[in-house]
Image (tube, rainbow, N blue to C red; front, top):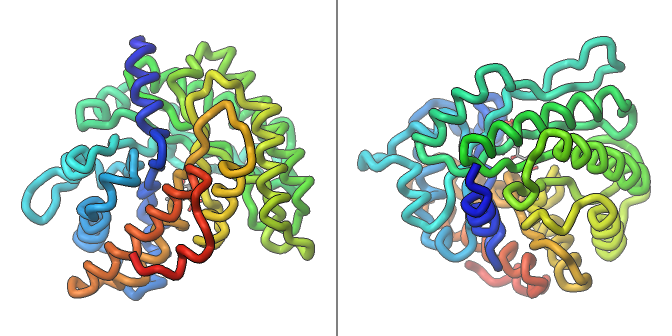
Amino acid sequence: MDIAELNRIARAMVAKGKGILAADESSGTIKKRFDAIGVENVEQNRRDYREMLFRTPAMRDFISGVILYDETIRQKASDGTALVALIEKAGAVPGIKVDTGAKPLALSNGETVTEGLDGLRERFVAYHKLGARFAKWRATYDPTKVSYNCISANAHALARYAALAQENGIVPIVEPEVLMDYDNDIDTCAAVTEWVLKETFQQLYYANVVLEGAILKPNMIVPGKKCAKQAGLDEVAEKTVRVLKRCVPGAVPGIAFLSGGQSDEEATAHLNAMNAGHDLPWALTFSYGRALQAAPQKAWSGKPENVPKAQAAFAHRARMNSLAAQGQWKPQLEKQAA
Ligand code: 5MM
């Protein structure tokens, strides 16, 4: 294992003022996104949409890496260029989602465990040949009913995945997501996230994963969407930084948050508050899916004539989050068109 090379890639993924575009929606998830904008979920539309994002000039300034889905890493743009090559041309690192999704955890109260370890070594070899230099595996937890069985099963799978990735020269993004879809309060989210992160780092240690060559992709500490008591910016920032400082060793080069269902502007404002108001041992940036793509998806709506408008919307969100990753975002900047 080339630790220096893994560390170089990991640091590039969290380079100053840059963050990761999570464009790894599986076919079912992209169908939901396309249904919302009236676009048919066929391969060409998926290709055209992602090609539009990867050709956005702002990619070069604000995006350090792109997480792809299996279909996308093999696709070619309309002019025959591999989509991976477009990402590399924009100075970003191509990455690949390798989990096969959350499946019911046997004998549990409706909890899930993320699967995908079978054949993963061989898949990593193939993905490396296709250009992937980092990977992603996401485990999800319902904070209203989580058990140690669920946390330890997922942490063990995350660690086995991360070790296999590093063995094959690929930086693992470790993504344990405490979901924000329920009615729990912010302190429940904090307590469950702390438990999940402690167990995850313990398992990474047992699996010999080198922290200098890994990136953490966690949720922020927020109340569930259905909780009557929502939290202010400073509370989210303070509680998130507190939990992360308790759990994430400084050897980890960077933390790149998921947006998890926050509005575009909330995800930006929370990231900004953490970077503006705290002394941090790691780079703190974004790895957003919805909070980077909702605006360009709506602007595009499947129409070629809307491409410039959609690229401008993507560039704007990428720039806002770049500023937030440096603690330099201000709400009034949202009013300026990209
Ligand atoms: C882009 O969405 C990713 C893939 O989801 P599915 O496996 O369900 O299709 C998802 O893992 C994403 O990378 C993270 O959750 C971050 O996305 P958000 O939208 O939460 O920022």
